[in-house]
Image (cartoon, rainbow, N blue to C red; front, top):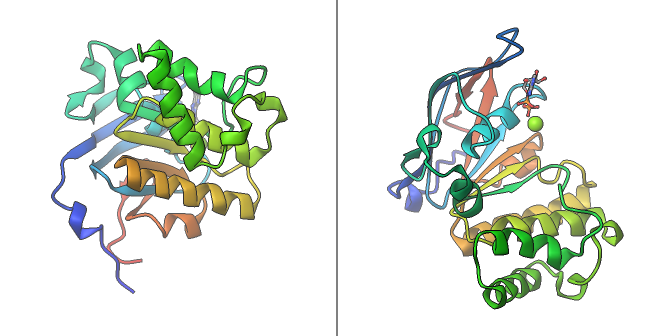
Length: 235
Ligand SMILES: Nc1ncnc2c1ncn2[C@@H]1O[C@H](COP(=O)(O)OP(=O)(O)O)[C@@H](O)[C@H]1O
Ligand SMILES: [Mg+2]
């Protein structure tokens, strides 16, 4: 079977762009990205695949403004990340992050974890609460809102992380092995939700994953090796 990027999305706006990006660590001893380039259009779901250590997380961090490239440029919604006057704005409004380990605050409740980024972004408390209730409903977490994170299952924690990432209605969702710490069945259920929410919220999803079965369900599959990104034309 030959699949191409969803044709309906082929002409939409480019929301993520990396051009010839280089990145190394330890004063150049570890070279990770060596001319990586990609373009992602609004609403696309994209899987970024490749072996552990190939640089998937490094690339996602550059898009989220959590790190800077040595050479090349990274653009989010038409603005070069390095030149963003307000990096916090990027993190709070334009991109949402879901990590492999949920990165939630264990002693706080599900609701508190999700409301923090919304309130920090200046959302009025009542509007934030309504948004949370909507997302909790979509992710089957309505009955867990007052529960502390430490009492939640792995799948519930990742679903909470998904809600938190979407609270401020980002146009881009960066997901770093979002189901990597879950068993197969839970992973599939969380991934179904991720795709469903990405579609209804209209976000662009860039997801690092090892899981080729999950990757095959995205609009596009990108492979990283030798510090560059390739898009196989057929799969
Ligand atoms: N902050 C850092 N300091 C030193 N080395 C790092 C740092 N971040 C990543 N690396 C190294 O860069 C390489 C790519 O890492 P990473 O982007 O996490 O890969 P992946 O997400 O594909 O598993 C690895 O060799 C890793 O050890
Ligand atoms: Mg990684």
